[in-house]
Figure 1 (spheres, rainbow, N blue to C red):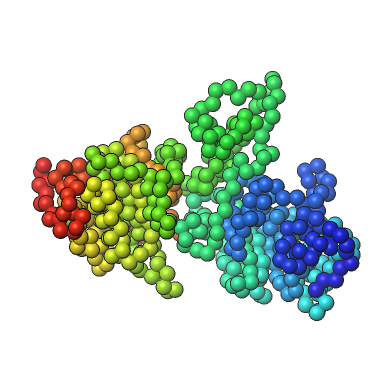
Figure 2 (figure 1 turned 120 degrees about the vertical axis):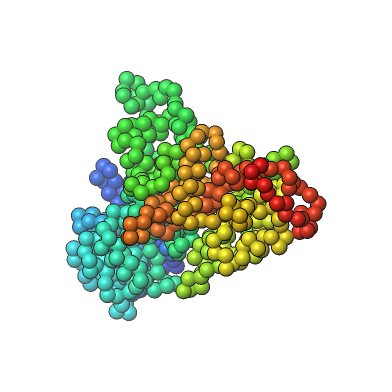
Length: 532
């Protein structure tokens, strides 16, 4: 252990760090240089405190610019290196000059410690600082640039901070993967943080994967209102500091969502005028999805998705397992559609984990208001049971199952206890998803969503999937559509089915409505006359 001769507050703070609580030592012992160039204690800002409470062993942080997460993480890892023998700490910056600035922060942490509390240093180079412990072991902090193809190779890494990952080159992304691969499980902590940089690359794919359960990272999003300094006080006669006057509908929505004051509205107007709307969303996002600007391959119009995103809301009811949510209860006089994407929830990867989600959504067939959603990774028969349960509740609704992956028997599992199932134009039950039907479904979705008031999507996950739905190439000239790498499209597919005019027509035919027989599973399917 590092031997120190300290009393009072300093001693207490360092004891807490030895016991695993580094925050008292960070705020008591460490110094940073403020915007006025003065050395001041590193006191947590509210946004940093919010992150500190929710941090995990593997975090990915999507943030507005200049919120101070890099400094807090550096401080935590610096204290870890001071009190834990034998750990390796790595910081990877986007560029060489950035790595130098990061190392200046680390050096300042060390040089401004009370003299008797500084641990013995065995190496102090332009990118490395090593502390020696009484048992002869060493802990090392190394800082490098993502421009280096060899940085971090060698010994195991116990703490890793990757800054502005969204701007790493493909080669640098491989360096990151190599470092992470050498982090011992159960005794390591890593943080990837960045502002966004378009819908592509390692950071984007990692963020999408974290939000959908595709990796082990815990996602943290911090919009610009998290920073209390982002404001312009009232100053009469100035261009941006004057009266805010009338606010646009969009400004009113943002003000309500974040409980903004007039000073923050002024700052927002000023930044948008300086950066333009697109770059403002990237540098100072208000939602995670808008931070990642489309890069030419997005299927759906971003302005339309922004408009629809304002309609999303929290469900009025949520099942205890979190898999089922309701936004709108049934109404006795309404017809409903229960749309089912079976995906590949029963298919497993090499670690026997499900590779995709299954989803069921409920829609009012006339208004296309989203009423409910079930999203899970379950056996196919369980999925069928959940779909039937929702259909019976929503007035014996029309069930529209995806026909693909027939080996799992979704349609048959539904028919074992329920009969009101969608009949496709080819004379078979269920909706096929293939190269022919997907473009038609996509066009139908666009036709509905482009018309204001034609639908009401309450699920923010559905909007997220629509924003990240891409044109993809198979390398052989065929341009298909699907979720961006690391993402999913299960809930979007259910909306595709529900928005199809023929599905809505079949759902509106009042000939298979709530009967006592259907709830017992003995209902008889009524043949459909498609010319009707």
